[in-house]
Amino acid sequence: MVGSVSGGNASALIAAFLKKASARQDLDVSLVKKAQDQEKMQGEAALKLIESAANISASGKVDVRV
Image 1 (tube, rainbow, N blue to C red):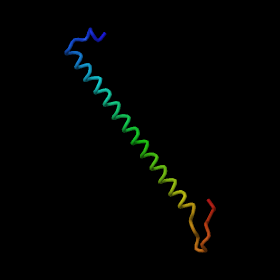
Image 2: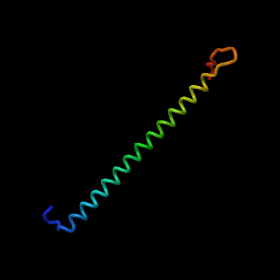
Image 3: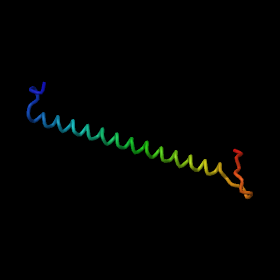
Image 4: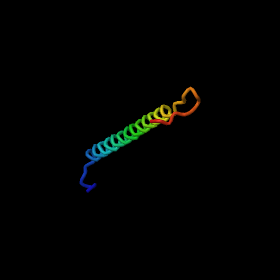
């Protein structure tokens, strides 16, 4: 099959393959970054929820009512 590809077409084929591989890698990196951003937002939201649930009243006791 490789023997049937002429020299000019082979370099174009390789270039297209490398372009596709690069695009796939860029997509994978952007998906990982998006997942990390989402996890960070969820962590910050969890911390805010914990802080709001741990309101300390004037008497110095923790208010556990939700």
